[in-house]
Image: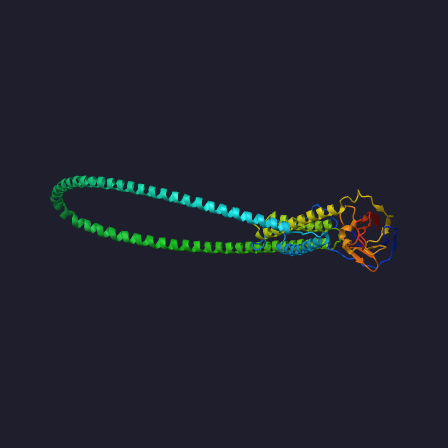
Length: 469
């Protein structure tokens, strides 16, 4: 098997190590197991950013209000469910393989942080509530005092205004009474004089005025009637013309609105269809990309964890596209929830990687410095071959442990293998959980801590390297 992005192939190999002596090979039909590990993505190195072309549809009309712009959330949530399952499975495998407790310290730390944060938040809320209450009381006292002062000032001002108004009113009434009395006396005198003069002329002019007035009234009535008829006709004609113009204008406006509405509906349908097509392509791209990760094979825990990180990276890139979409408007609650899940998984993966790194360092510490019993290197080993190590005496099964039978890859990571002991054959089998990578060289270590039934250790570490064809 090549590193991810290369096709896997099958084969089988077994080697026999007798005691601490010579190494020989023999056929051992043991099927290779497929794992669900991870590492560098197919066609992509770790840390390399994905060239994502899902940067949103920038249609001039904008998407309909009921369509959320950018990559859809549902596929991301579905893939996150699968990643969570993968991470849980890897965590369990790490705990079992290295015999360590994984995740408990992180959970305890998170619980303490959450509890401390809640206590701080409650203290701040109580303090803020006390300060708000005091501020409200002070503000209320000041408002009451100001209200009393304003009320007292208003009452004094009103009293002064009422007193001044009464005085002004009395002065005006006295002055007005004097003026009215004088005016009445002068008016009565003038009226009496005028009445005497007009009585004589009134009798003479009354007859003439009556005749002239009758003729003038008759002519005026005729002229007014003619003018009114003419004005009515003009008004009716103007109203008819105006109504006709308004009807014609209304029809034109209605037709224009219908045309404009039809064009807008057509643009909206085109935009909606384009966005749906783009979202479907995004969903399909994400499916294909993550399927490549899941179908790839990785034979070390760091590689498997790294693959999960890269899958999270693919989802984060789509969240970024969604957040930076030209039509994104306001807070994306669904996207924020997905981001929270991504962050939580990233923390779990980081904790698992740190635990694996520490365990590997403990297991491999001093291997290169120890004086090892070097065995002949093997070339052209098949990708799914299992190593069969035979001993000349029965072993203490307590010492047949993962840390005493190690396969190390070129990155100095421990390759996950199933270590089993056949007491009858006095042989230990190392069967890789996933296939080896093609064209890579591995080191097989058998520590001197392995003991026989009597408790006698092997004595020295045995080392052999092999290259996969």
